[in-house]
Length: 385
Ligand code: ADP
Figure 1 (cartoon, rainbow, N blue to C red):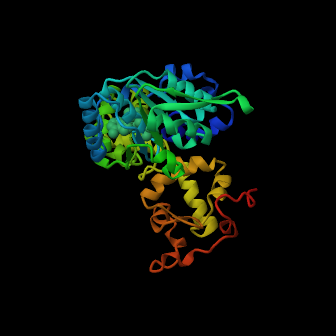
Figure 2 (cartoon, rainbow, N blue to C red):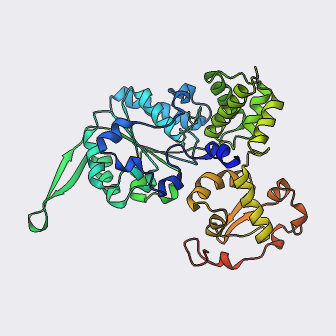
Figure 3 (tube, rainbow, N blue to C red):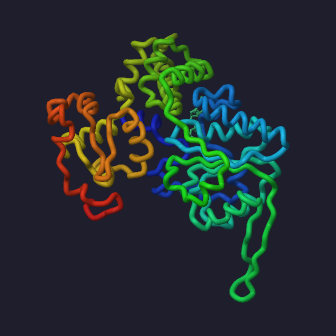
């Protein structure tokens, strides 16, 4: 019951990692034409801001984009390629859509895991019309041969391919119409430097303030036609993990309770009670986050614990923990990362009522012992069960 209700609040929009690995790879079955025609399958589409002025927060990024878009429009040129990085749910896809709207251009959307062959990527590029914005989500997951198709496409507006084999092989250059590539990544460190260097604008999205989230919550509640008190919105903002996608999903869940319990208006007490029933605590943690921290504290004396160990213990993919759970826990100082693994902070001990297990408050790491697991590099599989 718990997991079913809570999981969608944190699952990433397009590709649940576990589902992907279990073979639900519908996008990989698509032809390039279908990928281009398909657009986003995000059910939050109606809530997505369409214009820069409606996009809440991220002032610095909005300013940079506004200048770049205005300059491109004035010169009648395609906008320089843009790379967005940051944890899931912060607005990378939304900004790609906004760029297209602001340029009055078509948006073509795909994601790197959907592009298995360089030939498919070449086809997508040749189908682009002048001025199109091509959005590639999870761009760090492009294969090297696909990346190599992108280099000349981004730099010189052409693609090179080889026709024939052996002695009769011939290299052919095909010119593309001017386009803008917008890449999004949750792992900018995994992007190769040749690819990174071909983006003219590299923009890193930051977590949101409570005030920005409150704003997003009130806007979404109005669009979803659910009445929410200001104070209730503040409570939701506090538990939204600094992330708009989570904030919007909380609004949807509250709307469910409002409907079922026939409430006219959600006030703070009602929201608190709903969120508690959903297993979302005062810091926005869900059961899985608490389990992770508890394991670190109770089994590993606070850590360090290797990510593979944690993933195996909670039966989740490492990538899910690294991309969907850790960034917020690191940012909210519940967890720390060291070369040896993850550590629970004093704040985590306090939050989980485990302070009696904390060593010396003056020397916070004294209670921590290195475990055998942590002697392995993050890539080592050998200690897995
Ligand atoms: P990402 O691509 O970074 O995973 P999305 O662009 O899909 O994130 O955003 C997730 C949800 O949050 C979308 O429904 C979007 O409309 C909403 N959202 C994200 N950022 C903002 C923002 N700054 N203002 C309003 N809504 C936002």
